[in-house]
Length: 166
Image (cartoon, rainbow, N blue to C red; front, side, top):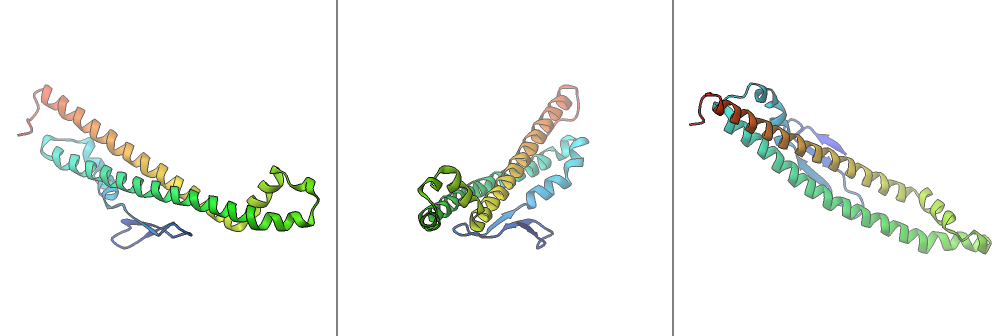
């Protein structure tokens, strides 16, 4: 997983792996919202709608990315299951031919599967996607909380005789 510096780092690229295609996630809305975060502290009615739009757009972008990542996670889990099936059906029977029947147990199979390099790579890929999803969801929460804060600030300004939004 790496950032592409095209458009000032506004695209996160996750490389392809087995059945999972390369992911290109736009994060330009995140960057814009992050850059405008200071303006939220000094919120005035004149720029409320512009700020709200920026944070809502960043939330929508995050939501789109979360859906794409969620789909990639499902495909990565399918890859892991396919790799496990291949190991169980091909590698383990070969190893069991050389060992006594008592070696055929759950611990033995689990050990063989966990030592497989392709299985390890698939698990690492899945963990990277899960971490990216957690980051995306936390970004969504920040955008939600910021929008909620701005709405409360505007309500406070209007109730206390501040400038109106018109």
